[in-house]
Image (cartoon, rainbow, N blue to C red):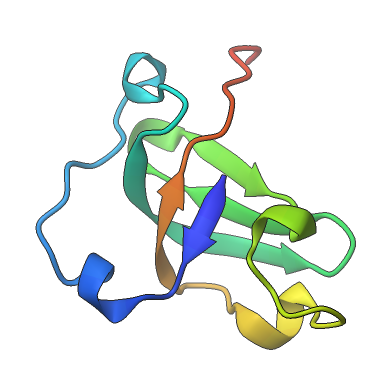
Length: 88
């Protein structure tokens, strides 16, 4: 996942991610941050219990910036799907 904090993207009507079939690489969906870890990255929640992880390298942070300084639990962000792991 790639995340963005750009307000213009969050304010638009967006289709929610409701199934793994929708989660094609390159597609974008709004989600809610459910956890932030400086080593692992940002954990996301989508509809229907779907979850995702954005690793620190994919967060677009400034060099030396840590995920906990840029993201908070409960924050709504727009995520870009990089890959899909269909294991349950």
